[in-house]
Image 1 (cartoon, rainbow, N blue to C red):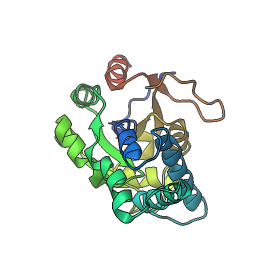
Image 2: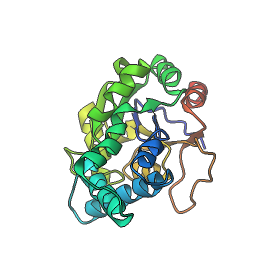
Image 3: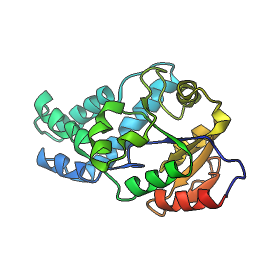
Image 4: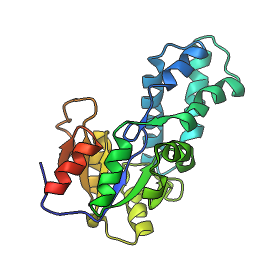
Length: 226
């Protein structure tokens, strides 16, 4: 579905939307876990972040992720020292952007969109990745949810981004690979642009995306025609 309204600001999710998490599998394997443990760990980290937000509380992504990884390692009878946990989670600072990120963001900026990022992780963790991809200068703001103290998809996280950009939420569109993020943004008043990187069906329980594209370059092409 394509909306006739053109947003002013594109709010870009980071983990999986812009970054490729696949290299983290090798870090799980290096400490004795199977590679697929990454998926369970990431999903559980989101779950606990969402749960704390629903309860009116907050903890940082790193805090929650460390606790969960510690539990997984102990449960598997593996070494669970701080050094081991850090060897896995430090991989977030060394991730690479998907191949379409640099050309896609460049094209979107050329089309006149303001570009910001908003992540449930720490904004600083992606600085090296954006610098390496040559897109750091394209990003007006790189935000995380520490200041609002609410994880996406809570409305407070998106409203915080609007406040920083000095605009209204209905002049913004979230770009993400996660349907729960699209749904949260739409309920907060933003448009929702779904990057269907994995070619997976969009859940019917969530509010539908205003636009769907397989990658950022395709998204730019579709917005150029809107």
